[in-house]
Amino acid sequence: MPTASLLTLAGQSVVIDCGLGVTRGLADQGFALKGLSAIVITHLHSDHYLELGPLIHTAWTAGLKMPVRVWGPTGLRRYWQGFLESMADDLAYRIHEEGRPDLAALVEILPLAVGGRVEIGPLALTAGQSLHPPLTETFALRFEGAGKTVVFSGDTAHNPELAEFAQGADLLVHEAMLAEGLAPLLARIGNGDGRLMAHWLRGHTLAQDAAAVARAAGVRALALNHLIPSDDPAFGPAVWAECLAPYWDGQLHIGTDGLRITL
Image (cartoon, rainbow, N blue to C red; front, side, top):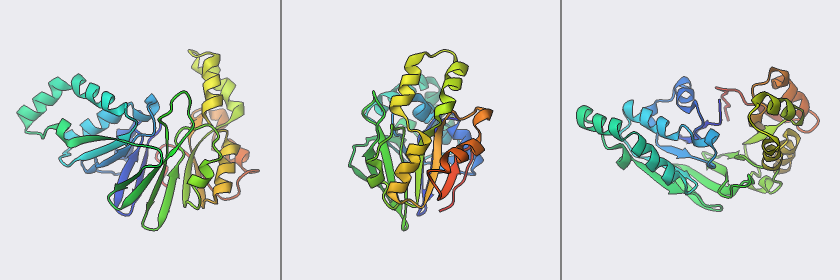
């Protein structure tokens, strides 16, 4: 399923990105949806925020009554208002007939800014710049707490400067693609043209380049997510690991739905 991660550190849980399937994914991990309190969206592409509204709404119907803060690009406010308008009949019914709290009053949408630092309970979040043209509000994320550091690259072209941002992290979660898998993926998708291939090449990172960033940053472990391709049996985990072997000899995790990484 598309991009979504759950970081649990220092007693605080944060959902990073809300692609399709995030609600089911959280439930499958045993996460109590009514305990949702913090979400960070790295950028406004559908595979990262399509299910933001449905996640919050489902948490609300499951018992959410405490505030939820959502950080991300400025356009999130427009998305959230649109979602509330689209669900106005349902919201009015549940508030009036079921005694639910006002969902709109529970949710606060907050802007992220490159270089900005946010306190999320005991966690410190620093936002960095990812390179994902033509978008400009695209963020890498560095979380610190309980003596641990976890960095998410966000969607990005190869970005050597990310090595400084991720320096010394316990875990770097970095997007990755396999060059040999791109042409078969484009043919299988079938409704894009050369512009889709051009987007992949200018806006995403080859696996070996992600490994180069991890090496330069001196991270303790590397996890690859947002895999391109992600569901082609010809390019399974063994192929990804073989591709990375010449470039990375540290701890490696190849993203799969439901993967748990313990720090």
